[in-house]
Length: 418
Image 1: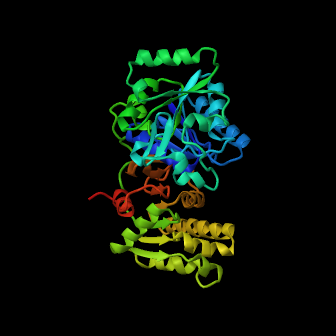
Image 2: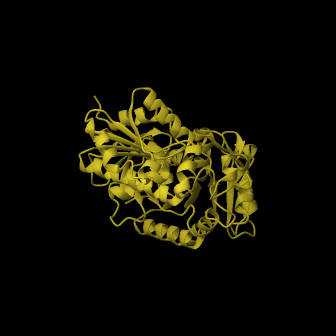
Image 3: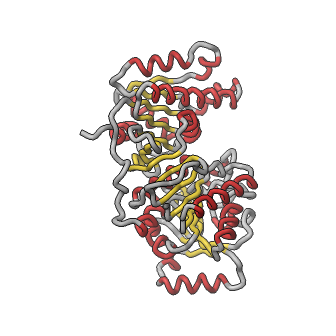
């Protein structure tokens, strides 16, 4: 039975969380939605929802249902996982979900820890920074769904939560455990529930946060404190031994993200001799190309992994979207999902995907709903084994994650070791 249950706001965020738990030594099962099967041979279960931009009432209801499912399966500690850039609007959904979780679990307080120093997300004096830039001055300032209007976490919570926040700055975190808890107890006077926001600039800070608050029934945040939290609960603090090795078989790479990181990864792969095919949505909409032609190209070379990508510059994307943004997005997602399905049916054992929406489409197309978590190709990007399918490996990454040579690393880590 799992001892730790995590509820994440989307699939790539869930795989991010699961990867750090596995790195800390906990066997992890990742599920796409509340699972039908009972969890076995695992110490942690991470449930991926769609609550980041879901309608608030539905997001709260789904999150509460997931918590109740985890509690019924034996979980004693719970984690609400959201994006390290605190993706939310003034109405939620981070605040309403966290409020409801505190109330349901009877937690007097919990922490807000979005920091992930390994990927440049840090908290200083209660403010969230992205690669040294205040959140509301970063690329999140003009996000189409969750534009960030402040960098101070307490201010981001103010319009979306019923409860107040206590900041613990760097000098506070340097105090003894007893002194810190004295501050918390003083703040708690007259408050039914509240949040604590500790500074989190380094990985050592994450270890300190886990040391101080790792015994709480409920924690919330990004994935920055999950590895040290797992180390507190695991036997030796090293990767869980099962489901971490490579597999034999052909590989296909699929990329739909147009992020700067993914574009650089595609260029690196091609410049270094990688075999690739660029999907042109305009040509497909005009009937000048189709999935049969793309699949023939991919399957023609049985020895060489092929990258199929629709990723493009913003100017070219805008040109394609003249045909209708939803139509183009649906076409590309369905194309990638169908390619992954054909690859699996043709005996491919390794499927590597770049892009959150593309990853979601691929997992839906393949019909996989639960995964064992192995080693990470990059921070927050684990190698995954579908539940009950031990000879297949998946790597699903968010667009902005990963090193320049990400695809080569993923191929090497999913392949059979010499």
